[in-house]
Length: 328
Image (tube, rainbow, N blue to C red):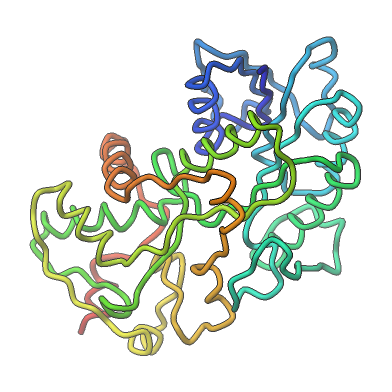
C-alpha cells in the first residue's frame, strides 16, 4: 500500500513509519515541518504543508490509506475528510480514551461520549481535549462512514515527548546513582497502570488497514503493577534499590499532583478516573492486538532516553526535595 501519514515526524508518527516500512509499504508524510523541522528519512517522501490550508499538494498522487496522527479540531478533520471522501481510500484516525464521559467505569466502544459547549474552540486544554476528539470522530464518520478510529490510552515507549512513563524507569537509575530511597505511590499490591507501547499501537493500526477493517477500537495494554515496572527497570540497570510506598491519602495531604507531578498516578479516591486504567479492549484483542512484554518496552525506552543530551530536562516528575517531602 501507499500510505499517507498526516503528522509523522515525532513519536507516534515515527512508530507508524517504522511499522509500515517493516511491512513493505510505501510512505508519504505530510506535516508543517514545525514539530521536528530537521526530520528526514531516506526511505519515505516528506511533504510540508498545513492541513488547515488544504491538501492540494497531494493532487495527482494516489494513496491507498491515510493515518491521521494529529487531528485535534473538528474543522481540521472536516478539511481532510472532504479531500479524501471520494478517493476510495482507508482513513485511520487516532483518537483517545479521553472521549468517554464517564471515566469511573471500564468503557467499551459504545460508552457515553463527552460533550462541549464550545465546539468551535481553537485551543486545547484538559477540559475540552476529549470532547473535541469526539467531534473529530463524528465529523470524520459523517463524511467517511467506513473510517477506522483507534482510541488509545497513554502511549509510551521510545521517543515519547511527555516523559510520563519514561520517568519511572529513569527514576530507578537515578536512585541507584544517588543511593537514596525511591518513593512509590499507593502500595505494592494495588498500584497498577495501563498504557500502550507506541509500536504495538502502530502495528495494530497497520494490521487493521491490511485487513481493510473499519469501526472503532479501544486500544490499551494490560494492567501493569508499578512494582513490576520497578523490577524490570532494576534488571536493566543491574541493581536493586530501596522503595518506600506512600499511601494516597498521605501524598494528597502533601498536595501531590496526580498524573504529571507523580506520573501516571491516579489516587483511589479519584473514583471518577478509575476507568482510565481499566480499559475494555476485548474488541481489539479479538481483532489481533498484540502487546509486547514489559521488559521490551522498558529496555527500549531506556536505550533511547539515556542517549538524549545530558542537558535534557524531563517534562514530568518531581525533584529530590519534593520526594523527601513525600517520604518524611
